Length: 270
Image 1 (spheres, rainbow, N blue to C red):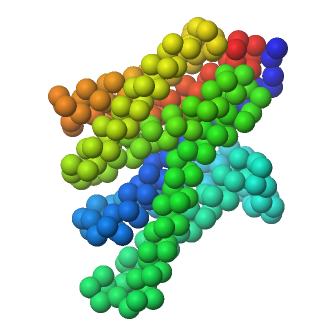
Image 2 (image 1 turned 135 degrees about the vertical axis):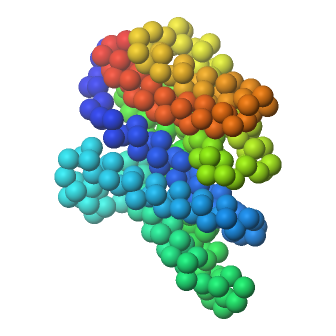
Image 3 (image 1 turned 180 degrees about the vertical axis):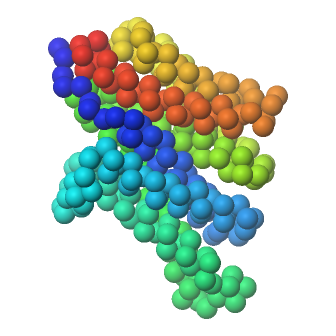
């Protein structure tokens, strides 16, 4: 049985990627600031998070067609709607990230009064909380739809999107010059998770998901699984400079691949 195919255009999978990277960057910035990590890393992570927070609403508004449609989604908070939760989370995330970035400019870390330091920590905690939501909720959003291939993978999609966002977010910071052991270890963990997810999806492609087994969606999702998973993992040990490129490319392919799979699945090819 076919269902109405998703009408999303390129802006939505791009938002899924950008929002995920921004969320991961905010988590790294918040944890790094609280743990007194390298100041340059924290600063650049804040900027990556802020850039994603600025681009994400523009992508959503572009897909919706008119700014007032985005604003209308903020009139009522619907806790049972992943879309409503996502939009409100994006607003809360953006507010915390921009405020944290502004505060980091203004305050003197060596001589900040207690209230300013407490405000900075509070903003970082908000950024961490909503950053985690932003990196994973898009997988939840797909899973609660009636699109067969998305619904069948409702449990794995949030983890899949979260892990690929983690690998891509770390990769962006590494490409900015922050090649540290902790980031390297996080990227390895993300690639390991993505490798296991890719194996699980591969075993289920022909059994339950024809949309993932053939056609353009199959190519894109396989490229995504490989890039974020085994390719990035191997490159971490043999060519670290290219591992981040593979993780970013894999994360992008994953988003576009799952959108293509949804369209194919909605047309009757489960």
